[in-house]
Amino acid sequence: MDTRSSETVVISFPADLSIWGRQQIDTPHFRAYLKKTLGQIERGDEWEEFVGVGCCGNTLDVPLRIEQIDGDGIVNPDTEIEYVEREACGIAGGWLVQSAGGPTV
Image (cartoon, rainbow, N blue to C red; front, side, top):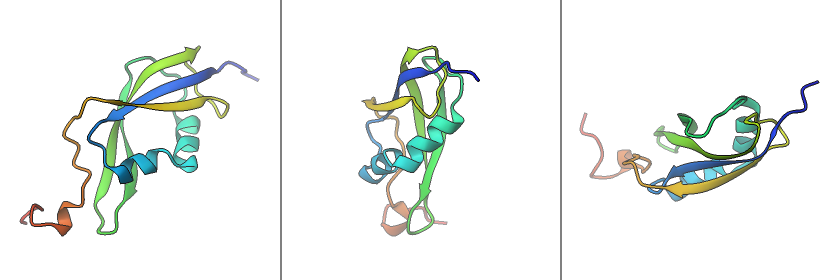
């Protein structure tokens, strides 16, 4: 059995991520999903992760990035995940479909 793992992994999210989006990435089930799916990682790895569908069917994909790894770069169920905020990126995580600023299709 492979016992290698990273003790802690620091993942960043954009500063303009909504409160709802921050709540989603901090749920136990989202953290468990990351621990199960990330596997081998390197500092600087970036990807977008689907975090949920809002009440109006508006989906939210969050750009995440590995900022720091304490260990060998292998994520498993024992790895602790910490989040930090990074610069804004223009993520559209609001409920535009409900507002006058929404798309006009």
